[in-house]
Length: 419
Image (cartoon, rainbow, N blue to C red; front, side, top):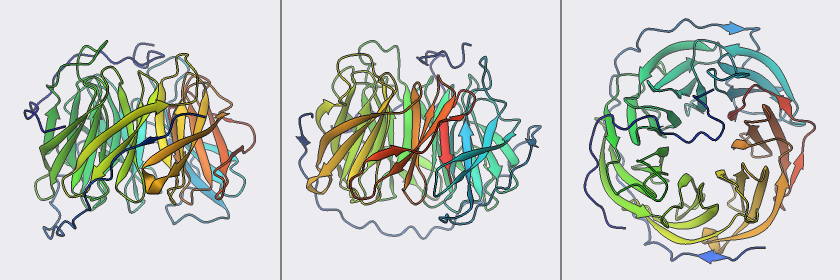
């Protein structure tokens, strides 16, 4: 779609998030899309990193029953760190960011402790150097928090300028934190200093148009990530049925919209994942229970929508959550919250096609978030309603999934981040 009017800047919107459990209130058709234009290499940005202001006041924080957490590269022996997101404001929720370890061979999880002083850390991401963990504090006064590893020291918290931040990511340069405010329908940028701490927000953009899709009362930004070219950022908005592409000014940390891609009305796009080749992406649509193959032009950041296709879960309520792609680009996995399963797709035609293979039960209820271990041999699912984390062995050849023992108990598990 062509670029529309520039969204308004600033906070906006009320608390309207459809958290399906009230987080803050207590073989299918093959779709092919046209190949985008051949990518052009973007010039390297030689601007030195900005000096971010020092982080704000550090909240009262502590780590109970301190585990041994290492930020060294992953290995196939010994325990590896696992961080767990939760809601602290609901009955039975967690006390902060859960800290555990897992065995990289067997997938067995062992409990460790909790980083307290972080409210509703519902989504987690790690800095490219592995030394700092970031949490989205999903509440009405949205915030993001930085935690230094391996000592799990809380470095500080910054306001996102919106309500209900539900996703964050770190720019590949390691200099910018990107967050999506669901309730306000806005996206924010924060600078990251040399210590990993966050500076004051450098930009905030609210999705004021197009009009909300069927059944939606306003924009609902659900994801904010960097495209494979590194210079474009993509914001997935469930409320407006739109994926917005922005150009990031890497010197100032500001955003300029360059294009928009519209889904089918009422699709409710939630999560976008790129193929390793960089020319295609896969979009999970939460509301209409579909997945879309998209073309991507690395030179312009333009996304092109293909035809929606089945999740393999039948006609019932499903709410697809997140989609992952293996590092070799051969398979994709979709988390189905209503169906409590993982859909496995074969990726064909250099990324242009998804072919549905099967669905596998997760052994838990409402798989909200899925992630690979760094080596891609394990897949973790955070099962929100059953308060568990399931682990699967991933067959590198066939892409088949095999459960690694019984699920691990973790209060209101909404994110599992293995390092």
